[in-house]
Image 1 (cartoon, rainbow, N blue to C red):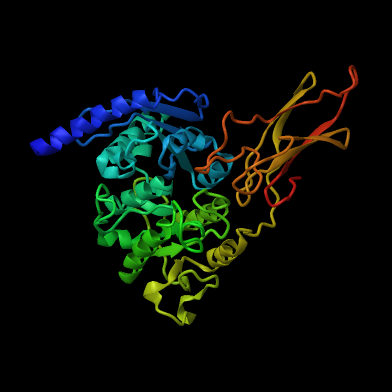
Image 2 (image 1 turned 90 degrees about the vertical axis):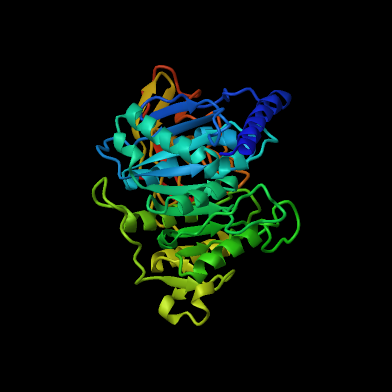
Length: 446
């Protein structure tokens, strides 16, 4: 780095600490879940070295029970701004995303950058500004901490929101050989210079990145149907990114959320099955082997901003401007999602386990339904329903969820417990209790 670059980097670092004090940011963030196995966490301080990350960062990871060797890591990356950064602190505790990770023997990792409210998000969401290096160091150190050293070498499935989409897309362009798939919610990296945003450096598009399945997922109110407002530039940026990659034959699709603006809404009900299809096709059978190529013999295509997909051989339009979908099953789910986000689910959630009573307090364990997550639990005493947990499941961004939902698609904090206090139980009488899980499609467990 030349002298001017070194001086600028040090000035940015000094500015970060000055503005941290002015804006009341006192890292580390002090409200987050305890990390005890199968959860692990570490934190890195901000660096003063040129080219390294100027913000502190926490990485939290969840390891599925019973997995001897991990096959991959699913990264759930929050967006820009202090609130979104803090929401990353609960990402690894999301039961629905854990269901995807468990299905493929993958870890679930959630970063949380300690970015002050008005600091430049590019200093972490562009991986070249130190977050790439910090992330890979985090994988090594968490691998040692968790007893899974292979974590530093396994493939990545990347999900990112807003600035996190910029980061996930940037990591895909920088390391296409490591990325099994990338879902970009409301944010993409730039492939050409932007005169309106000169702080954003364009990325190069390597040939290998064209073979990585990518899904762009803007909200319709981000420039598709609503052309004005704070997020109106999201769709034009997505369109440029998608068409440039499709023009070169890249495996990229578009899932416009028909209900939302910048919030994540119900996007997980499409993101999770799409990533599932990509991981099923691409993860190697043995750790250390290269990713398998994405099959292209069962592809479906749809018109840009259209809502109907067909097998590629029957697509009448320009295939280099079409939405790419990996197979028929995913295409059917996609058509349901872009219509009203109601991706169909006919399977009930897993039944709760390990039900225990201590006095009048019940506790239990449960896994989320893979397709539809968890909405709530129904408590039965002696065959009669006596309550639900939570009492009123909520989510102002989409379907009601047991864990709630923050702006960047992570559980609310403090985390809700699987616990119920039966205050009306008759003292001295022995009762029979049952707990029933209900998914967000309204289906009950056995």
